[in-house]
Image (cartoon, rainbow, N blue to C red; front, side, top):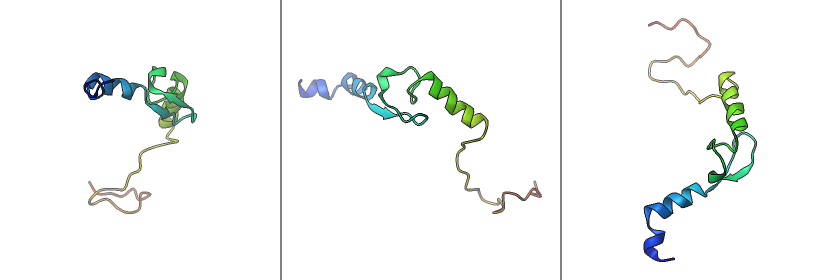
Length: 79
């Protein structure tokens, strides 16, 4: 394979599609081109993850912003 073939955008896209990744739901290692539900290994794992988000079992961390109280249990925030 020549240098021009390796540096082509088409080759780079092919390599990205063949990247081996780790499913965050079940832990399976799989190639990206083996799934229709990236970044999950299957539709089932995608739906399990969605269910966790919907039931607030997982969430993004929140550090607060300017003017927010340190105590998140306080409900008397002036608007």
